Length: 233
Length: 173
Image (cartoon, rainbow over all chains, first blue to last red; front, side):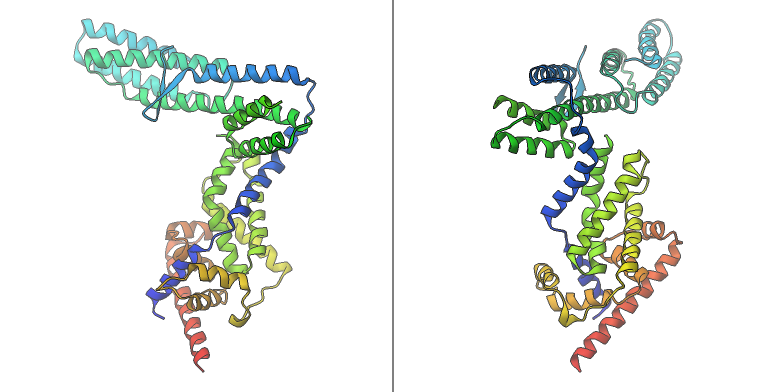
């Protein structure tokens, strides 16, 4: 056997794969083991109160989701913050507009560089992980205003502030994580309660599916499954 | 992305590779499944659950797999299986791979000969020829210079070829 044939045979061994059911089960088992403590927490609520909490939770998520829309697969912040850098960026954009009316090109270039630097700092100081809903909401509002002002500058003066794209995508990411985190907490609470409730066979299957979705990190889908389940009650 | 989602991504990306790496060495799907579980559980408990960042996941997973295999061989000394005694499950998996160019019997010989190499020689063959890892990636896993890795791969493939030739000659006799 020459080297080329040997290489072909070796490459063919790449087709060895584990059993797909086992793969799925193992992932489920490892994550389930780690998360089971969440489900063992007994809550001092009765079901009616929990249902209200669930509805309230969904309202929070929907409200948060209402802050953006999806356009051609991209998340776009709707017109509707929190660090000093965001406020500073917004103010600087306003100043730039005034400068354009009275001053020369050199000053505009210098101001543009200053704004991009502030925006870079604003991106760096964005929370790395979900902090609290109110804070995220403020950031989203501030970034939306910055985007509007930057767009206006581009339309009126042809000045493009590139850093706004990074700021928008990072803010959208933060918002998505915030929604995920909120959904996760609600799902954990609901699963804990449902596990100690008496359920029909159909509901048990749906609960199992919701749990599976939860372990896969698909918190919003898990929440929808729980809603469907509770509608059967 | 929370730690559970991070684990999910890591798992989906590497489960096949790590299972295959272990299976090619232990020659049993049951044992490969057990040891692969151990690898991912270790990654979870030692890193992701504690929020420790993983810079080079491929390198970390293969190193963990090697340690798990070393522990396993300590308790279960390695036994070489002759071609005639190959477990049915391995023959079955090779039948699935078989094509016009790749013959089941040849695959068995290659697979069997691979297990006759030293552990580190097996590793570099699996990583370079089967998993398509770059020399740089292999040198990172082994913590060896890239030139050293190149020499190791060259020697290992030559040695594998010699074992296969010997196996084929023995068959003819």
